[in-house]
Length: 180
Ligand SMILES: [Zn+2]
Image (cartoon, rainbow, N blue to C red; front, side, top):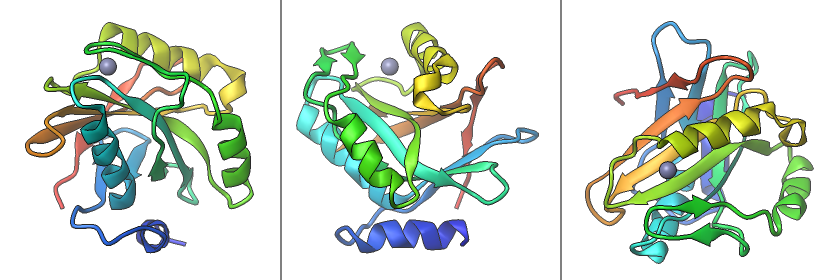
């Protein structure tokens, strides 16, 4: 199955979307990530709900057959035990195991993290980089190259995205957004 049809499958379970799928890559890198429009819409909705506070959740999806591309079909809301402030966010864990067990039965799994920098740039902070390295190294996540997506700015107007991948034991790779 190609990436587009995976995204369309994700879309068909949600409401009609105006926004488009976004693909992130970097010349010479072995990895790419496609954020399906339905999951970008989920992020935007969550950021609007969070107002002036940070928020975030996990990214759920699958990989292309050659393993190079993470296809993100779901961006969850923040778990109830998350801690959020204006410039801090610590994602909780409540309900995630149950959710991931259910998704696993449909061939989808944990592929990374997303969070919101309200009114700010989507640049990863030092803490963001450390937490992603820890996730890549943590066998409980079973994810050798977790992706991090940050939405910065105003979710109802001009927002921007950053995306990075953190291959276990290697330097992180900052992606660029591919032009459609
Ligand atoms: Zn951050």
